[in-house]
Image (tube, rainbow, N blue to C red; front, top):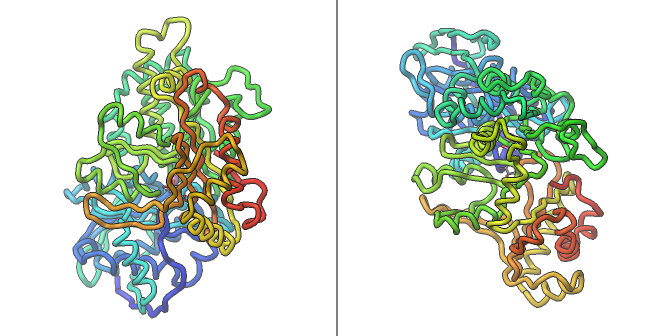
Length: 548
Ligand code: VG1
Ligand code: CO
C-alpha cells in the first residue's frame, strides 16, 4: 500500500470528556472528523507507541463502528503501526479490550500497547444517535488527562493526516490474519475471537465450578439483560456454556447497531424488560420472578444487579474500608483516575455511583465481572444450602450489610439535555453560594427544618497521590452535619446540551430505620437540594429526566 498525506483543518469541540469523545453520528461522519481525532491521538503518543506497535481496535458494535474500524486500520498502516487486532465483527467490550491489552499474546509473541475503543457506552446508538471513541494505554486503562489534553491541543492545530487509501477493506467477520506490505515493511490485521481472552481471565479469578452448582441448580433462577449491547457477545459463552444457566435466562443478548432502538443504560428507567421480569416496576407483579437479575450497558462495563433490593456504590464503601482498616481513595468521576492507584498497588477494588464496579484484574470497570462477583458470593453462601428450603438472597446479604454498617440511602437525579448556558449559570450560582455557610443554612432551614446543617461546602479537587497531577472543579459538594451530602456536577459523557447530575445521600445507622423506601427517606434532602440550587428557576425543569 501507499501512504497518502491528506490536508485538513482543525474542527472545533474535539475535547475528550469523562470517557473519550462522544458526539452524534452525524457529527462523526463529517469529512475528516474521525480522521483528525485519530491522527491527533497518534501525534500525542510517544513514537514507539505508534511505529512498529500493536494496537487493538474494536468496540460495542454501534452504528458507524464498522466504517470507523476500516478508517482506523488504514490510518494505523500509514502511521507505521505494525499490526492491528480486531475482535470478530469489530466487537469487544470495554473490559475485554483492557484484558486483551494486558493479557493477549499474538501468534508471533506480540503484545498490544494501546487501543481505540469505539463506544459511547450507555448512550443510544443508530444513525441519529451517538458514536464515541477513546484511547486506552499500555496498562489497559483510559488515557490519563495529560494525554487527553494533548490530543485536544493537537486537534486545534492539525494540518494533515496519514492514511493508506489503497489498502483493501478488511473482512472483520472472519477470524484470520491479513498481511500487507507498505513503504516501511509489513503490516498485519488479525481478526480474533472476541470472548476467549476475557473468558480465560474470568476463569482465573472466579471459582466457575462453584458458581456452576448455583446457576444450574433448579432452585436458583437468573436473568441477564445485555440491552442489545456487546455484553451479548459474552453472556452466552459465560452464563450458558460455562456456567449452565438456561438459554431463557438471557434477554436482549444479540448485539445490535442501534441497541434495538433502546437506551443501553442499565438502570431502573431504561432496563424496563428486566425490571418487569423481576416484578420490580411500580405496576409489575411478575409470576415467579428470577432470584437474581442483572443488566449491562452498551459496552458492558456497567452492571445493575437486582435482587429484591440493590445497593448502589456510595460512601458505603468508605465505612467498610474504615472498619476493615483498609486504605481508600475518593477520586473524581471517570475510571481513568483509578489506573495510577492500581498500577502502584494502592487499590484493588473500585466503584462508581453509576453502576460501575471492578477490580485490578484490568483497568476498566467490568459489568460481567460484577455479576460473577455477586454470583460467587451467593454460591459461597449457599454452598451447603442448595437442597435446603430457602436460598440466601441478594436481599438477605444487603440487609446483613445494613445491620452491620448502617445504610447509605442514595439517589441520583439526572437532568438531561438542559440548556448548556443555564446549566453553567446554575453551577456558577452554587459556587458563589458556597462562600457563605450562613446563607446556605438559612436556605436549607427555610426548605426543611428537619434537615441537619451544612458544615462544609466546597468544590471537589483531586490530587493524584502517585503522579501529583491535580484535577479541579470535579463537583460542588455540600456536606451535612449528620453525614448526608449533596453533590452537583455536569456530565462529561453527553453529546448535546448539558446534563446536570445531582447526587443525594443520607447515612442511617439506626438499624430499625434502614428498611425504608429510599425515595421516601431522601425526600427532605431532595427538597433542600432543589431549593438550594434553584433548579426550576435555572433550568425550567420541575422533574429530572432519570432517577436512579
Ligand atoms: C458517567 C458516569 C461516570 C462514568 C462515565 C463513563 O460520566 O457518571 O461514573 O465513569 O459515565 O461510564 P458523567 O461524566 O456523564 O457523569 V461509561 O459506562 O460511559 O464508560
Ligand atoms: Co459503559
